[in-house]
Image 1: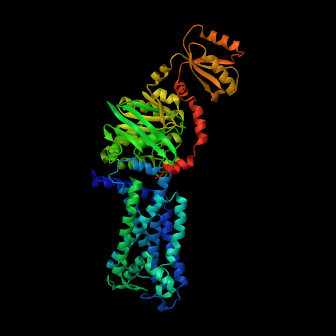
Image 2 (image 1 turned 90 degrees about the vertical axis):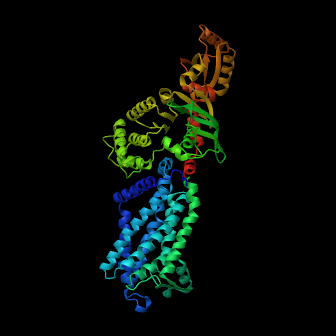
Image 3 (image 1 turned 60 degrees about the vertical axis):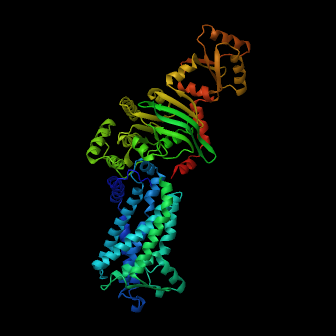
Length: 274
Length: 338
């Protein structure tokens, strides 16, 4: 990226404009937001009812399946949103709107990426708060202040990680059809191969191994633990086949994955944007 | 001094030479026309000037600034109006201009003033607050032009700005371009409309197959041909062989030069005739001697199309048809995507 004459006020102005555009689109076409809130709530009702009679020892550390499922759905919602974040960029590429941005003397073209991150992060927060609030109304509890901090920190890391991959795909793949197809292929299998719907102890050994390496699991478990009142970062969050992971371990792993993905995609974004 | 200098510029797309050794000089405050059929390389050249693609070879300088090395400085100088209008359908025209102003870091106080000024200049008051998705082609083009002018660029680059427009929108754009030029803006305009270039441009470059085939002032280019332009037919639709025979006859007549067979118009013969009193009589006699009759003969002052025809052996329209069959627009669109 060009760094000469770098001006933070200009960077703010262009990032704000790009983010504002995405929110205007959301306001005039709110179906993404509505679907993103409705879908997990329907899951919460249906799956909550489906497994309401599950034996108590099936679910470690929680007293109901709805309580267990909440964390998985928050992460799944953020994950789906972030996975779709490449779509607006892909449409801008396809319809030539990206050229309008590239011809402008942006202080840094990083603002194009930054605006996507901001948009998806804020959208995920709105959706997550809605899910947490409805879970609370259903009697599944609500995290305390420190727990909320863990929820949002984990979501930011997950959104950064997945959004960076999605934006990268938006530049690599030839069109939106291919991107949507890939999202379809990846979305649900990653959910089922995580601890969103069932604990590792309930899974066959091979799936347990996959789930314990799944980045979604690293996000789900700290959020699940954040609902307990006595939470601290050294709380054991995951009994993985290779050993126990604390909340700190899970968040650290997620952090490493996020930083790695940002480092890996940086050359590609530089090439495509400059 | 030349404000824009393009030296030995070349660009290839896989096995196609989009631009080959282009040399152009443009003076400050002039309206510079790029004339050529679709697929000639006009858009590639303009995209290079707009910093959207990099040249393979050669150098471009705007106001002494190297276009490849100092891209951001160049972007501050230029306004670009692309051939394909890309608007955000969800935004209103005003929101789009506001968005564009922020991308160019225009201060809030000046932003509203400039947007309002352009709304009036381009007569957009009645529909500026409607969503862009509801606009007609002419409205889209006007809002796109306004977006390109918002930051008061020194150079305005327009890629076929009036293609498919209604007369009202076209006249508004033409008038504005004339006014901007008079105010000192340097304008580069590509077109395959001869009348547009003839009416607007101070200097014109004719491009064909990625090469510059002629350049200069439109009047100069036309007068360079000299004489009178004559289009001759010995039959409504001649065969190529017959036209070749007539060409041989014409070649022998003093005062007739630059004979071109125009396949797009039934293999008629286009040539320049010196203004001599008895030249047409001589022509009739020579044709009659070889048992040809004149089916039609039209005289006209040379146009830019004649300049193009003289240089390539094809009319611009003929070249358009030829290129339309040759181009793979889907492939080109994919290639142009980042």
